[in-house]
Image (cartoon, rainbow, N blue to C red):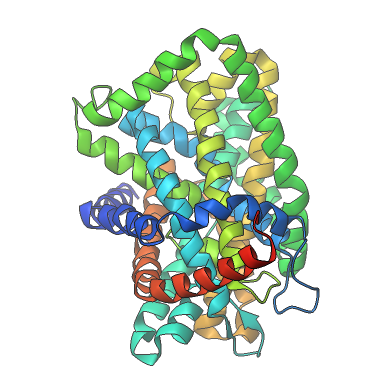
Length: 459
């Protein structure tokens, strides 16, 4: 097991080498400047779209713009925002947060392009049902010669969408924040607890995911907005009580981003790589998973869904991840012992808000983790359906349920490395196809904005 873990960690580090950082950050910068920041000027328009002021119920697609965004956010707002930020600070120091911000800023542009394409080049699966996602974008937009890239995305996506990290950290939180402190179990009973908790979680997951996209999006659209408000509200309370330390904390993030003094003996490369890797895991811009949710939106205008998707990195990384980072830095939890992942974040909440903080965090983790598992299960079935046919894609749900139990008893390092590796490989077909097709996105965007401005100058 240790040899497998070492291999997975080594492969993840290789996959997230400088070349991939250039592809994700460099590709995002390309979208940013190629678009000349034009979509940013219409960000407010996306709120009107979310309120349902556009598109009719008979438009192609399965779910509303709001449910599409909620489903995408259910996939991105999760352990990446809570445990992932702590992992970033533990491995890369406070400066890693700065590079997470950078992935979010360029990720706004990346999501506009990838999710516009997800609607522009929707295809039909083997059952004749309309589908969206990088594999269909590649098939419909680039043609048969590019099919290996589509297969690569779908194949790696079936691994990357397994609920390993979320399950592992959720079970760890239940054990260390609730059950052991309450004296309900002893630390020596960890394995038995993990297995039982994994079985219980698997049962909850099965009830929802076998209901399909409508049930998944319905749960996500109710749970995600409420818990986001609770989580950010708790962070604001901590910021108010530590107001005099906010400026120094932000300054530490910025200065450490370019010096790396807080970690690994000043290894600036570690800081940058860690921040980008965790940022990509958090907001998924350029990975391709988000495009599968937005590709299901009910609309005839691809650009509208691209604008809606831009809201994701703002909420996910710039607001929620920053909230987590500030709680950890303001309380000093990152400098106390060897705590990592969700344990570090739990320590920060308890230091700031006492035992109440632990239970608030527990509720948020439970909600975010479970809804992320739901969304990822949906993504995985779409990948499986592309590979083995829509009539057999439901078998992937059984894999998700089984892996929910398995992930509850495996180590955090192995989970992070496996998912990181899959995300790295998913980014290749997603970013390459989006860069190649980007002129078509801009042509559609200019036409859409021209019509919008002619109808309403204030858009």
